[in-house]
Length: 298
Image (cartoon, rainbow, N blue to C red):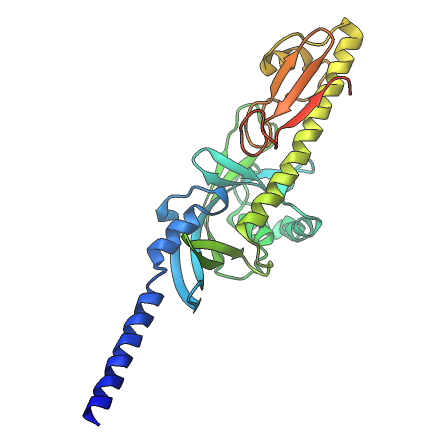
């Protein structure tokens, strides 16, 4: 009888030890590191505070984290403040226009009321307006602690025609983790009342939107080249995209286009009777499958 009791106690101790090991398998430190590198972002570890981790199975977990997020707000063509960009790394920003939807714009319009106007200069959004706009794009219903504003600072950009501001905020996000043969990975992200989305889906959606933007920009440059040739009897002869833009803007091309949506310079090779425009695409490497190319004749 005593032997059976000892065996049961031993089994309980083994199970308890196993449970502790499993729960500790995804630590707050590990989760924080994964969050700071998910979906291609590069945040300092100090920007993420993991509040809670719940193990849902031996190979999955959920967590709630507070993330220090830095946004750039800018006025649109109507002079209304909108969320323009999110900082995703050192000197790296992601445009919100890439993922903006009609619903997002509708929710953001709630933030245009006079009660949210800044008491300071007209070129600076109020803290309330900044919080309202960020909550709108994240799907957070205010009042809520899921979006808090630390600072709002006017941003002076060279040659900028519209006011903008940098907003340092604290946002709460829910995350799902999955464990595969290589270890733990972020499997899903959710803010506010938005649906869960995987980092892979988010990246794919962003890149598809960027491909569309690149094609539109390259089409505009190609049309400008056609107008240039009609007048000068030759395309711009150069291997430099910078030289191309200097020849096209502003007479043949209304706006200066130097960088693609991945913040890489466009490539250009032009001779008298032909040209090739190229964006390196998401991988930022030339002559790969995701290159976007526009060549003459169109």
